[in-house]
Image (cartoon, rainbow, N blue to C red):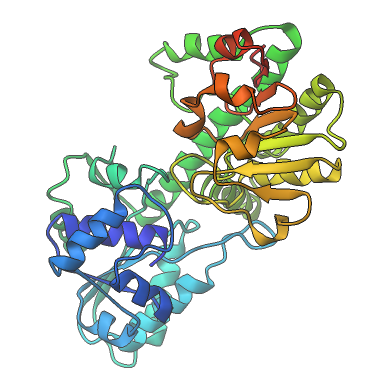
Length: 423
């Protein structure tokens, strides 16, 4: 019952099905049963309250009951990166073995988790080995394509539904579950479905890193990267999405999935050199522009820097692989004093200290600040009263790490505005 599991469960409840959410964490189950989410995602809290009231969804920490009482089981556990970049499948295996041990009749196991190619075969094997008596079952790949911050909309209005299975019965069952959703359905082999998920995320990461690397050249030669990408995006073969330069991608998907795909390629003696470069550019993008901005400011040492937005993107509290964390670490090494703001996310404990303080209001955050670094583009910052906020600052530098602020308007107000390849 993490991000994917809760979202999936609530969406199926919204589609009219009776849903049970299983997690071995009893405190999480109690919290969900009381209508409280352990993460922030717009709209899900309202849906949770509605479907608890209508009894379309319930939660349990009893795997025996959950497995035996349901013929369709969605597997939504995490697959974190191992130290070598591979996806850690220990939680997937644990669930598969629970299903095998407690199976009492036919089960359809749909793998929502992002898993390496050929994991469906392994799940079938783990279930079969754990069975105490033979029962029929199918394992299907049904990857999710959710964007954090808009997961509810994406689930109800997906671009496509991918079903990886060799079983007609399993495919027909999943089609029935999704029958209320108007989206094309692509049925493939399980391996292909697993590959589609990884290939999709790796391609989106590639678009981001391509533009980010291009922004460095634009910064050098005095070309506005935002104008360049606007012109590129008008070409329907390219499109405008994921073409905005910034300080790099983060979150739970792109970094992890890129590593896992690179690991799979290496295991098969194939070099994905483009994806290797994508990861390299992303890992260096924030530090590249920090060096540029440090020169503009005349040094970060003992300067007070306001960090706006610490989640990896707006409308989420997710800090996994967030570029803001690397930026703050860099600034602290430079002996800067940090004042931090985010509408939802909270500073991790390892960053809390004498030289880092989080504030509830923008005015307090910017009080006496020499410079601002925008790390995630919450609407609170895009629509802020910058004329009023300027009056509380010590100096007037704005470093726009997402190219979302109006540089001309800010310059007219007396700010020194610098974006990403956006002079």
